[in-house]
Image (tube, rainbow, N blue to C red; front, side, top):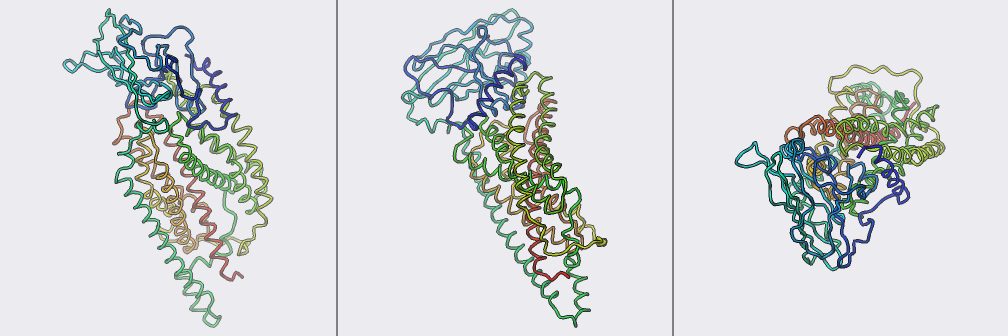
Length: 589
């Protein structure tokens, strides 16, 4: 079905989403309760190469049994559409609790074109996805003849086993039988059978069968959390001990009497260069508009991630198709006030005058970065005629969310932030003439400090990245959001500690350009995550082809941009508190 034709139903479904805001896991078109002989719909969704999760196509792009004209569609929420789902009624007759012996769906007459399509699909390990009562079923199209690799077999019989408890469907399972050789001119009978079996499992626990407990709750996962937690304790203790002891000594030196001036100057020049830049350390940073925007966006993203994780823990959002994506998009729009507030306050405190420019950049920078990457990927998907192509109607709804919710809230936040920020009130007065920055050893330069700053934060989330990547790219349902919450909090703490240490070393080297350095020092975590994604692609997956490669690295780039901005904002805010704290305790003439 062409994308333009599909866009209107998507638009209507997404507008409905706007009214409901968030579609939780237990929301559906029915109450999931059936009476005997009630019709049960088998929805066909998509097909695609097993090794390429994002390369999916309409189920009827292959010459399977076609339903009658105008089959009904099931349009989900915004996240489901963005996930490339298109559920179509298979029109296979299924009645609640009625067993069906082997019954014919249709007869396929194989010609050369159909044989070629099925053969290519089998060689590429095509899989398909069905849904019954919002429960997924998966299977492969066919298999290669074990005795002759040049011959391919198509599965012609689908045996569906449905387990129920009272008037509710609990589990569904699909097995395929009767593989038939693909030959031009041959006629194949496509058949199915339905078996209903009672089971003593409650409806609330019916999704547990899809959760891979041995994988996500493996001992190595627990060990990684413990290891990261110990890193936090060690790092925070080390930072507190070293910095507090060093700063205490620095304060003692600066508090000496004037008759020991010569010794004081020698000690300051040799060990304590951070006080020498007190007249420049609060100088407004370069590109203040951009820094204000990214710090505001990063603070919003940090709040957003925390909010979505908590909602996922409370509401089990992993059960609903696209529920996580829907929640993320809607919550991003609703939390835009935070980015405007932080950005407006930061811009105003540093003497910025063009606050409208800062507000527009804050409201549009990250969405338009994602839109630019998404537009490129969407062009690729349209060229391949994949379900991953986002319909025009969905784009309109996302734009409406941004234009009528996100942008106004960012504007309101900016106005409030400017009015509540107050005067700069810096501990030290900024001198008129900037102090020259002396040359230091290579490891004290801002670029090196920035690159090294991301190593420890990346190390704290390294193991969790493997589980996140595996769940997203290898068909596993990620459900351990309690682990993710702990790892996220650990990441925040480690990022703040590492950035503070880097800022102290930089100031001690008499370099007062700490604002951007602290941001990039924390944001460099995303660089290491992206490098890890390259390793993961080549070693841990069997992806291939331009379509999947572009989607893998495009989505990963989008994720790393958000992670980098988030960590950078956290690092900058932590360094700001540290800098204001240490200069508050010295006498600035």
